Length: 367
Ligand SMILES: NC(=O)c1ccc[n+]([C@@H]2O[C@H](COP(=O)([O-])OP(=O)(O)OC[C@H]3O[C@@H](n4cnc5c(N)ncnc54)[C@H](O)[C@@H]3O)[C@@H](O)[C@H]2O)c1
Ligand SMILES: O=C(O)C(=O)C[C@@H](O)[C@H](O)[C@H](O)COP(=O)(O)O
Ligand SMILES: [Zn+2]
Image (cartoon, rainbow, N blue to C red; front, side, top):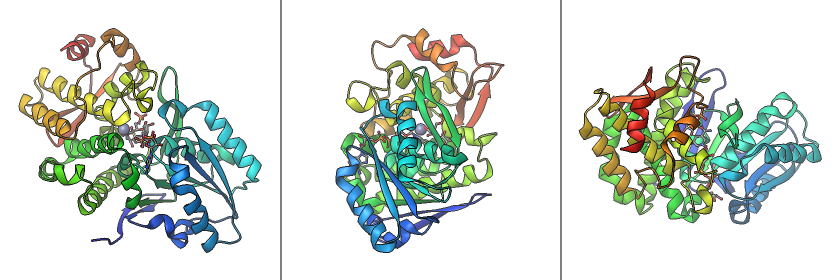
């Protein structure tokens, strides 16, 4: 079945997520949200050679009047920096982008977060269309309007909430995605089941082989269901003042690992975001059990599913627990009262918990 699936994100800045094969060639759809005459396509050095010309050609065919620029960064988490953000703004200036211009983020979550942040800041905010090309970006980062760059001291520490005008996910782009990146995306897919709906975990267990084999229907269903879970929570809590924080399950631990490893995930000698979140979710589930809040069997079930998806579930050797704990103090859920964790009562039922002592966290890190 190759139909285009549509998920609506409600709220004050409503937009649609469209999911299906061949959308990169659909210039009318790609340009529908473009109001002005300038568009800057932001991409990276892996994605641009594969897809950028096609997107430019589709846009030109639908909108011959458009002036289209490109800004291509080297691939990798270590490129999600203030320096690249500044260069992206320079590219908008060189294009002569006016306030009705649009930034088109063509790539994974690194490109999406960076391009989204540039669009949030250029002339105090212009439109952004997210065109995700990784599974992780299709199920998570392209939706919800969190944009950011990293600092050496912490993940996503500089950013803004700036929802996209549209999300257009061409599932055919997943055919060129490396296996490791497919698995990283599955970690965030599993997250939705873990926090919101244990029956989605049942579905993932039943379709694990199909997903790993890139079965088109299984992938499209996993993407659409993930987007529906995320759309529902970000529509009611766009600025993470309440239960949107549940989307951070596994991230307090995961971000600490990524930061402590110097964002080395994409180059191979560290964990990438999805992998770090996989480890973090297992740690959060174990911490829940250690505190007597949740059955240990649920943590074991989560670990088994992540392992089936080829994801890591243990902290990489050589990382110092005290150093990881120190990194967590800059987690964006922390406040004057201390750290806040997303824990669960059982699979499919997460909650935000504060007042957890360092000793319990450290015990989880060393177990
Ligand atoms: N804003 C949010 O709500 C949100 C949510 C989740 C994650 N994130 C962020 O997203 C980032 C991770 O995103 P990611 O996993 O997409 O990583 P990524 O953007 O680094 O992409 C992973 C790799 O896949 C390559 N690639 C992308 N699409 C491809 C394709 N179709 N074919 C071949 N290669 C392709 C990229 O060049 C890169 O090397 C992190 O920075 C994370 O913090 C943000
Ligand atoms: O959209 C959200 O909200 C999320 O938390 C989704 C996460 O998967 C994502 O990694 C996000 O960027 C983390 O946000 P942060 O506020 O912890 O930096
Ligand atoms: Zn994430």
